[in-house]
Structures are given as structure tokens and as C-alpha cells.
Length: 172
Image (cartoon, rainbow, N blue to C red; front, top):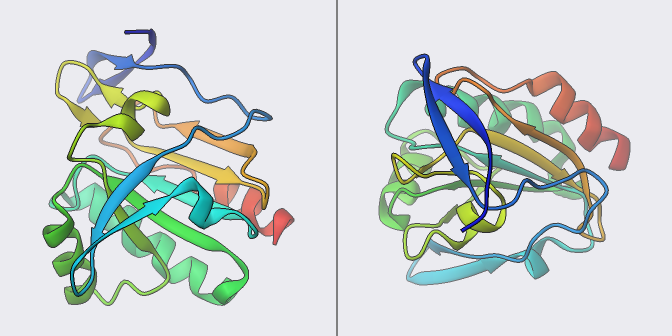
């Protein structure tokens, strides 16, 4: 398995599996699960045609991940259906659905990589030692090309919301 770079969690260095996603390259394919009146799949093909933001979090059951998801939900509301917005984690689809319902998360769809961690490996955000996803944000153009990428170096810190949203707004 390919490895690249490292992140830290509370100062402890950790290894990222997979290949680093580069700005200007086509986004890797993925297939994630979500629960809404049954189990469904969301893939890269579902994002094509509109600019997209993908917010990656370790777990919606943690405070920083909740803040990240709520912040993007609030700030993306103004863009309405001009963009696609997706939060990805290894949380079970049922837990993700419950969180979004309880917190009124409506601007973001959710996708779970719990089955096989293919997203984490393909996007270079799977933390080998913990088998969870690193915190990251990606912006894709309408053709699925990566136009912005941030893997947050310290997993316990929030991403750069302003930079990610500025990249998205340029494309919207």
C-alpha cells in the first residue's frame, strides 16, 4: 500500500495511507453509503455537473468534527443548489443520518466509508495507525477535477473554511 506524508493527532505523528490527491488532477472515484429511508450509494459520478466540496472528518461523534460539519452547513446554505456538498467519515450511515437530523444539517449530504475504506485509501486520508479518516477538505470543479485540497496537519484542529469556500465560490 502506498504511503505519503503524515498528520498528527494531539501532537503524535501518524501515517497516511494511499496516494496524495493533487490539485489539478481528476478526483479519484469513490462509492460511499448513506441512509435515508433505506441504504443508498453516492459516488463521484453523482457530483459531476456542479462544483463540489467534500468535507472529510474522523467521526461526527467528536466535537471538532461536529463544528466542521455545522460550519460548512451554515456557510454553504447561501449557495443553495449551485453546488454539491458532501461530508465523508467512517461513521455508520445510520449514525450520520441521525446526527444530521438532530442538528438540522441540510446543506450537506453524507457518505460513509465504513465498509472497505476505499475512499480513505484512494484520497490519501486514511490514518494507518487508527484506521480512521484524517480531517480534510477538497473542492472539485463541475468535471470532477480537484481545484483545492487541504489535509489538516493536526487532526484535532479545524480546516481553513475561508480558503475552501473561496475556492468553491470561484467555481459556482
